[in-house]
Image (cartoon, rainbow, N blue to C red; front, top):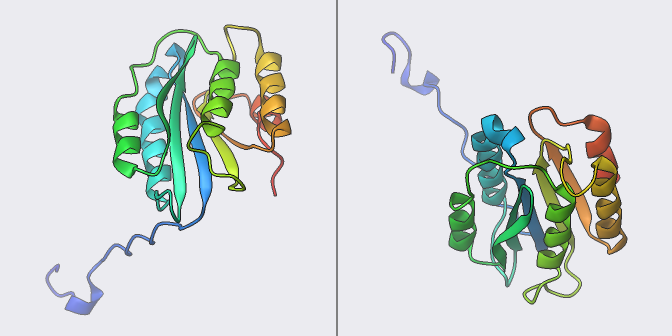
Length: 178
């Protein structure tokens, strides 16, 4: 403690809140296109922070899957209740590079969230982390159309923009606030 400061006045960090125990199927769809290169470490840190918010446990909590995309999309882990598998998947995210196919990321995210491990009746959410500009496989309109397909299947989309994300596109991709 600094000199002259009573021990009870020390600066202490508040304790971390306990993880949220909620049944949820969550697929994080991570942009790894060249345009997010400068933001990739922040994007991955955000993904790790999100995982830490949940009790990852197939019996009582969340199951999480990870998808990354640039020109094409790739599953890093299917839905799992194993938090170590989720951490490993985020750690395996490849270096940013290539074009941006948000629509491919969303399509694969939908496939993963409806995969073999999906639990019936459990809410499904895709968390899209992107700079929000589709440069291959169509335009932003293609991404918005794919998002509409995902939402029509009863899956919520939370879109988080990084870098120069275009707010109007992100709003069109995301589910309406509830």
